[in-house]
Length: 299
Image (cartoon, rainbow, N blue to C red; front, side, top):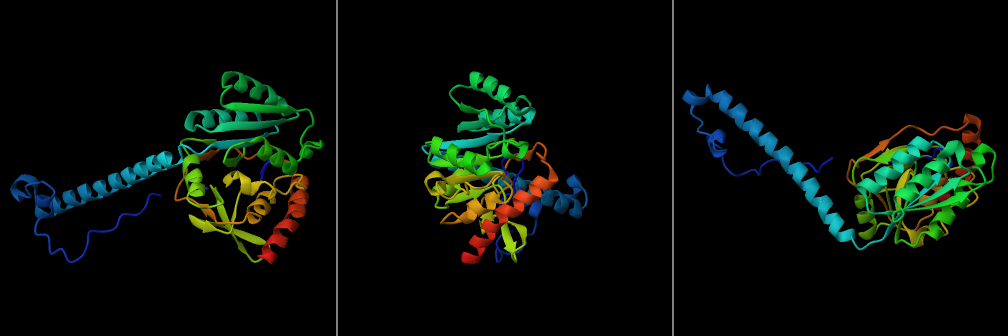
């Protein structure tokens, strides 16, 4: 529920309809002769026909997924999308993350470089020079809070939201990369009425534990990859959060509207976890969880 300064099937195809009558020779219906003299014993014909049937179903599933994705692209082509990145180190991962967005989406990328940690700001400069129409970068001299600076998750996320002029704003962690167009299904869910849609959803189990949830409507979303209606997110970001752990939960719980996880899996891959000092992570996570509890109890 957050690392660094920032913060996981095709539709089953049903069986043939009942009541259509017995099939005397499935192989013949599939275009084969069904002649035991040509193809061996009758059981071989049935086995062959079953394999063809199974292969056809698998192909249909892939076709359905492709058609659905293309339909979503058409429906969302006029929707403006911005992806907000908080960059606080891990320069190689930043490069992979940004390049994956450039390759697989048409979204505009907005990035805050917090203190040029480990040269990550230099990587952003090179990327901005290579893709000036796709990437906007702001370089902040102050390091992130987890490195002893004053640049916090909450204030940085809120500023990115205000700098973005897109209709849909995507929160993304630089520990992730896209291996396909993972944004269109999220944006489509927002266009269809959700206030936010995410890669991973969760449901509370009591007040201290959460379980993974989705696809479909969920109680909260994790902020490693989450698309939100930007106008709804302004004011919902917990600006007092120093670090992202559990702050993403507080953000999603503070949104008014439906939260969903699209039918997946989405083409997203974690590069590696962005770990910070364990004591800091736990302390700030507990601090942010007070806001989560307040919202859970109020709902």
